[in-house]
Image (cartoon, rainbow, N blue to C red; front, top):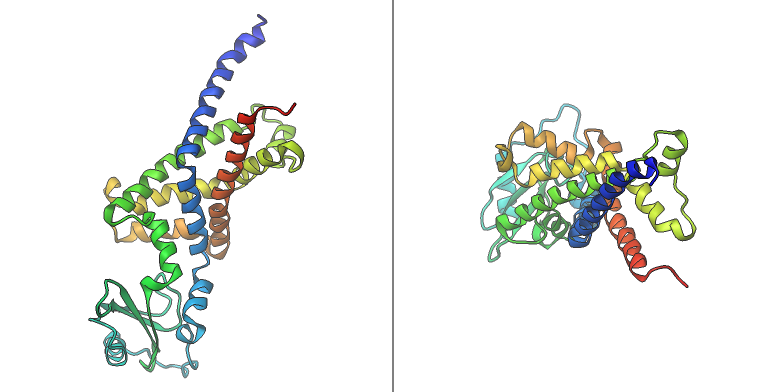
Length: 292
């Protein structure tokens, strides 16, 4: 056997092992990765989705405040919500405009609703403390996307554990995919083929698979790693609140890059179902064997 063949044999063996690892991780949990990615992409569009579900009137200021106007107190917001919306069983607290997950120019007052295990949210003008709208958060499609992304619709801690464990497996899948995709020769031609594959003919699915992972590799790695911590901070000695959570939430949701980061995170989310679908098609084609 030529010496070059002897040298390439161990490499080919390692590639076969990495390929099997990558394949079986995807076959077993690829559908979970796809759900997490798709729901994460939806959450990047939460502002227009919330506007569509509850209406712009509840989210926008009725009139701009006079120059120098001060906002009403949190107690005034809560009192106005109690009086206007008897649906509340009690009021738990309030959040100022654009300070939380739900984007609004109005203040948010929240608390459990009467007769249901659900959270009600009142929108209150932050300056005049006049009520602007009320909705039950749990009834929103947005809430269902959040529940899917944060806990795979599983109850209690089981959901966050499942998401964190899936994140660990996703990282392993990404690492194995990197190893298989990385050009063996660091030449311009090799990198061009890796990053700009042909998206036609029999290599279409493989090209889409490799290109989407290659171009979005860093966002995929960062969102996966930060998502593990956010799902189960206790595994790392962290707290569910505090500066670390705020920083990692910003990293997870926008890569610390503002609007550009949100776009990249949304694309990374879309890439996960694309990777699963193209990988599944390649596997099915391989099982059928070459056409005769």
